Length: 231
Length: 231
Image (cartoon, rainbow over all chains, first blue to last red; front, side, top):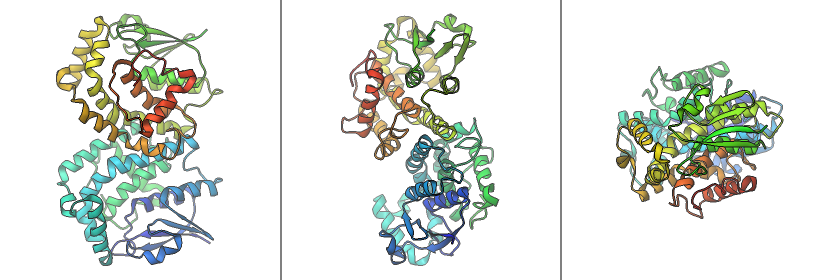
């Protein structure tokens, strides 16, 4: 029986843009585990009430339900320990955790500012009011005020990616010569953007672009094949 | 025969403030390797000309000379593979490399701005002109212009430490339940400050302060015992 994953969707069932869900989906591919993804919208709280909370990703593995992207990935690493490792041990797991928090601080807010108008266009109609209300409360400003002029923010984003770029000057992936969870954490940010926004965030001669390209090719172009924009 | 390390010193032989040298010294302690440190000043290029370059740390292990802090630490990990690991494998090494570049981008420039006036006071007299000339060229401004008002920069530093603080909400060290090289990379930034500057960078109720305190206690209070300020 394949695993099941509740996965945030936009207007169309197959427009999947949630970064934490992308982290889990890439981790499942890395482990070679088949998954059935179930499109879910922000306002469908009832559909996942069985999980005891109201956010996705929610993973169901037989009788086991796991919530929170980090806990899901740790669950996969432990439960499927005989398959390729996502962390390569405690220190690798700690490094991936740091990179996850770095993304949230340094990368996520900049991409959010850039893609916000496009993201709004691609939300399901029934999520529009919820998204606006919850995000405006979180941000303490209107979504129109939160959206930044693109050029300056793209420049800031490229500068913010400096530590990743410096690692990639020495090795093919953030995790070494093979990709692993630390790579998927950052890729998930770009999948979020690509799924809703036609703006090119990275210059083609940027090693980060080339790294992302390799990850888009991975697992039979799994991430590249997602509904979105070829940027 | 103990290893030898050329280690940057200030006015006094035992005022050692170089972050890359601190990274190597903590790595040597972690490996349980004895080292004789040799005080060196920026302008003593002749003393390390044998290494083929002009910067410290320079490690001598018998007939082997290794330069560049990252290469030295990799050398120690490989050469002394039977001793406690600094990285815990390829993914851990990659995580530590990322954290090293993150420090250079996000932490180092802020600490530099805060401690600069004090750092100048503690340089050896013969290094004063070299330091000023080389740093002003690097920065494109006078050292007086580079020094920032403290309060705002300390606030910015504490904000910049967010990803570390978030990891420490889940575990005792950046590397897991035991410290390792990723921890020493960040500790080295604080050792740089502590060795020359009496300003308190961290609030005592900050988990980062408590983490640093545990590292200052490690290896019989090796880092705590260094000449500097008890902040």
